[in-house]
Image 1 (cartoon, rainbow, N blue to C red):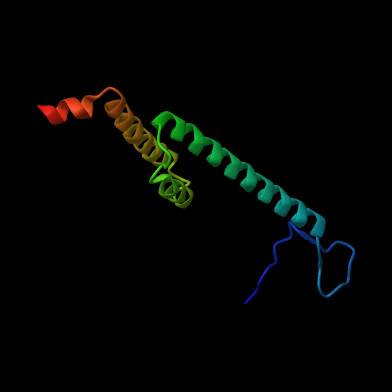
Image 2: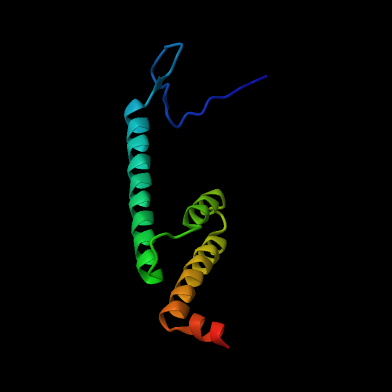
Length: 110
């Protein structure tokens, strides 16, 4: 069985080492950049939640975490993620509009 090792992160040129050196600096830089982007995404999600809560006039956005989890699991389907968060936001906003305009009261009295 002939196995080849990936050479993108290995420095095998001009060396006789049994274990090739790995570009540690590059790996650490990628790690740090990945973590920084993840934390930025967390900030964006917190901002999105705050804005949607303001729009809904509520104190809790039930289903938001599920939308985020489902979106992460299905990153190759951004339209589905958009549809899910839109449905969640619209449901909460519609509920607010019905309550604020008195439509719930009006409909119950009929």
